[in-house]
Image (cartoon, rainbow, N blue to C red; front, side, top):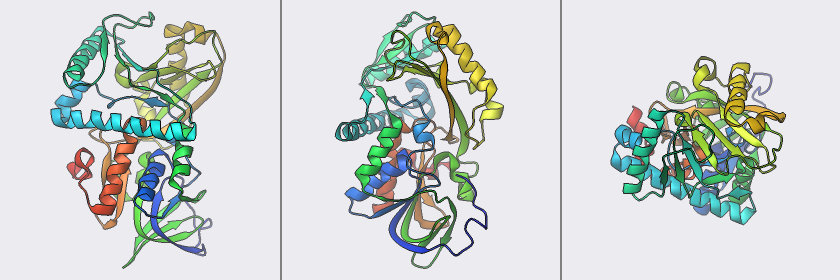
Length: 381
């Protein structure tokens, strides 16, 4: 979310009125707009750019069940009940995406996921995770050797996972919502009035009954409440030219989520990650530019694990800003200084895993004061 100078918005912008303003027209904001429409509310989406041009279209398009941490580690960290609920909400989110994709002809593939071990230690973790997921009724298969025959130690196959075109999905959600868009209009302040919330943006000042913030990694630029609660972290990817055959036949995820890869619709290969070795420059930044150290890691990964793709040109390199929270779970709540403003932020790089569930919990909080459950921001104080 860019800053706005005095000259760009000097107080002479037109004044508008809205029922509900959703700030952020990405995956989460557009999904929230869908649920708000279903509840009979009129929505104005306000975005610094346009629909889905942030992290929503800069990710790998993975529909993975669960969180970044493996299942048994989630149980240790959040408790068995919470872990089970999170994985179930992830499945519910995927069902919602599939419904939208089918209705709006969004490209997707039900290709399963492979959680792959890059070390013997990770292989042991995957085996424990698979044992616990199976006990809790989540479909998975532990593979004690490398199904890709590329040097991995073991894998867990999750048959109901898949890949999707994330930008097309976000655009489809926007279309489904029927919301109006005020694009190219960065929000620079939220002000409280007796009866309304005043959303000050570059192109208009909007007076709204209620507001929802869905700005994820950029949230700290909007309100001081999010400073230290949502940390912006850069993720980077590359895409190769087409190779003679599919190399993964799944969405692949390894090194505890620090590396990921998939076949692309045009026959190329996507590889993302490299942040683990470069956290000093990739953590706590809102600059969505590529960096040479991270791209060098991705190039080396190609050569080691996918030499067929390393022999063809890299046709695209890009970066996006994720929003991470202190405990790895999304935040849904109200701004303490204005309870008319609800937020749904901090997707921790797994917006396609939990985004619909997070958006639904936020809308329920906005409309009926329903408790957000495992996503309740009050847990962090």
